[in-house]
Image (cartoon, rainbow, N blue to C red; front, side, top):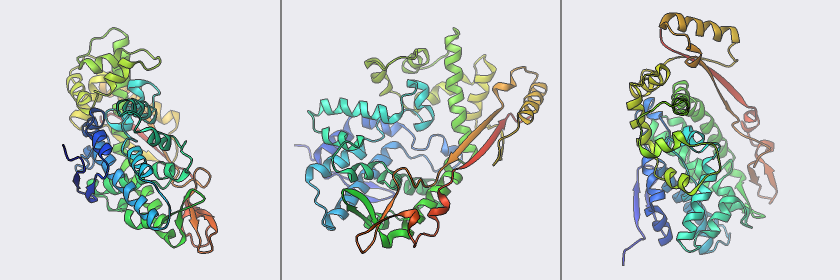
Length: 401
């Protein structure tokens, strides 16, 4: 018999145990193995060269942190059955299984309005059929339907093991130290009260450090102006390609990508799902390399920007750019390049961040008295109250001329 209780050596967390055979079976499945070919951070490696890690890395890391969190809760007297432990680890392991090429950037371009969580759930149900119902409880936890609420909060909330892993992992691979949260310290402060996930009050500053680290990572890394631009261009490339194909143009691409370029907006079919689970970053990169030579100037321009890393210029502002300013840029680009459709190349990109929501799944602190206090209302908090306002930045992009 094959030994499925493996140990994985992870550069971020060290040795990761796979304590249940079903976890190994899911990891070995083609749906999950595809995540090896899906970038965790899109085109971020064009800005931070080390950011070449994948969704596969992240899912394994999040599974490890879930195991650590459950062990911590058990030590604090919270009763967690082996079935619950196994299911919670399965749920977080599969939480990103529906991600498309380049992660978030293209998820709506291929399957129209099918968010990756919707696709993840669909694929989980298919896997559940394959594994004879062994994932049923995991799916309930993922959907927030399991009767013990804290399991879903560990999977998806403002302080979940998903965020703890991606912040620490993305910080490690980008080299941006501001995101290097102390995941072990935060997990050691986790507790459960009335089936809700809470944090022991003495961990208040670790939580505030986590929230500020996340905020800095967003503005310094994920929403970095060139990172935001690269993601925007990816969407524009697929948008343009779909439009050209709908007008009768023939664009070279793999069979699967051709299928999605020609796909009409409608409910997902079995073929859609089957083809989607074969798509990865490589097909999009291959297409962009070929489309650099497209007869369509706009498609060719955008693809060259990415493949040759010749990005357009950007200006960043805390206020929206005026229509007049944008129109002047369009006019200048038209004149300098001798074209008439510069409006396709000049765009305003908007990025917003709410660092902490006091209303949606707030973080609660458990006082020594047994009282539960919302983080932003705690007398000990220093920064949380300042992070409840949304911040927005505007980026204007236009060709270098």
